[in-house]
Length: 387
Ligand SMILES: [Zn+2]
Image (cartoon, rainbow, N blue to C red; front, side, top):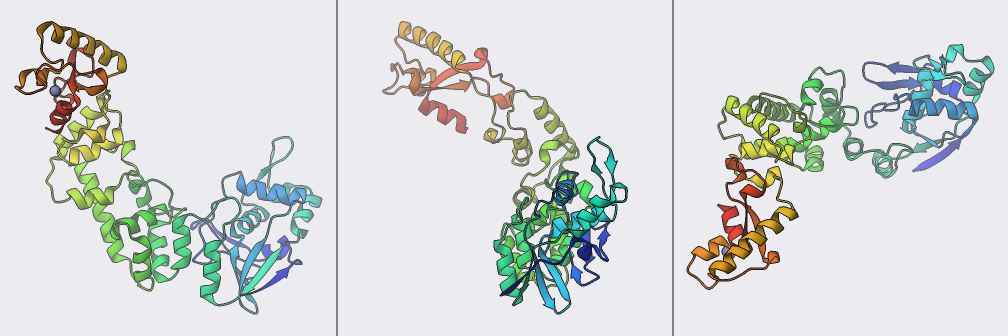
C-alpha cells in the first residue's frame, strides 16, 4: 500500500460541493465531487450530538489539529474517506449551516452568523491527509486494524467493512436506517441503535445462531436479505404474540435463543400476561429480566428470577431455635434428618453445614421471612430444592 501525505488541502476545498443527506444521516460528497465521504463500509454519521460535532468546530477555531485523515485513492480524481468521515461531515455540516455552536455569551451561532475572520479561519485550515493506494483487500485489512479517534468502531461496524458488498448494503438499508418505521417496534426487544449497526447485528446473530462472521462471509455477494429478514420478523412476531404487554426489561434479551428453544410450545397469551404482571409485582423477584424465560420454560426454574434469599439474622435465629429444640428432644436439628431412619438421625449440624429453606416454596406463595424459614442440612436442602 502506497501512502502520500497531503498538507495543502483546506476545509474549504473539502466543503466545495459538500452534500449531507439528512434522511440517511450521511455526509455524501465533497472536494468538488471527487470525494465520496461515506463509502458503504463506513458507519453512519454519529457526531451529531451537539458535543462531538461542536468540538470539531472549536478545534478549528482554536487552531488545534484535527488529526490525520485517510483517503483511499481510487483513481486520479476519485477518493473515498477511509478515516475522518465523522470530522469531515461535522465541519461540512457546520459550514452549510446545519448546526450551531454557542458563543461566549451562550448565544447559538451558525456559520453564516459568526465573525468573518472566524469563518476565514475555519475555511483556510489545512488538513493532514494521507492518500492511500493499494489493493482493496489490503486497504480493508488495514482499515480493520485502525480505530477512529473518539469512538472506536464496534464489532459490527468492523464486520461491515470487512464483508462489504451487496448483502451488507441491503442489510443496512433495512436494519440501519433510523427512518425505518419498524425500528420503533423493534426497539422494544432489541437494545442499541440502528446507527451503530446494533439492529443489523441482532438480525445476523439470530439468523446465524451466533455465527455472524461466517454468515456474512457466505452471503457477502447475495443480492437479497430475504432469509435474514424473515427470520428476524419471525422472532419479533413470536415474542410480541406470546407477551402481549411490552416491558422495559424485555429489551436486549436473547430472543433468538429463546425463539429456537420455545417456539414449538403453545402459550396462552392472556395467562402469560397475568403471570408477567404478578411476577413484576412480586418484591421477592430480584431479576426481572429472567421473568420471560422463567414463564417460557414452564415457571419452574426459579434460579432465573434470583428470588430474594433469607438474611443472616433470620438464619441465625432460626438455627438457634431449631438446635435448642433438637437437643432437648435428642434428635437432629435438621428436621428431615430427624424423621429419616439413618445415621444422621440424631446429628446436630453446625450452622455452616446448613442452608435456609422456604417451608412453603416461594413459587407457591411462601414468603421470604422468618415465619417461612427452616434450616436444613445441605444435602436435604439440595434434594428439596431440586424437586
Ligand atoms: Zn438433613
